[in-house]
Image 1: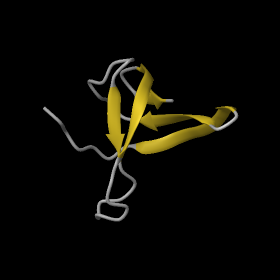
Image 2: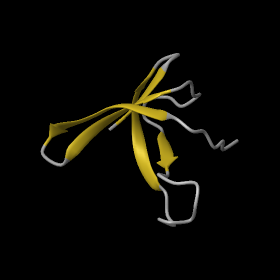
Image 3: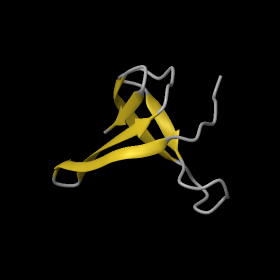
Image 4: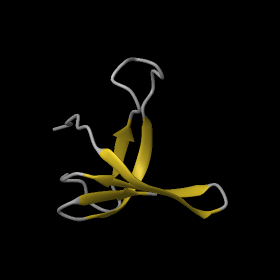
Length: 65
């Protein structure tokens, strides 16, 4: 079941040209190989969320690539 969560960005790093790693603080049930929909606001602006692939996850962080 989809769930909305607020997570804090703890790292944002360019790992290759135009490829970024985003590490978020928080616990989630997502697993590597899945996608999460990321929004940057609680409003409808920007309207569409962005799908990002789950690179890694632990009990305390979620890493997106």
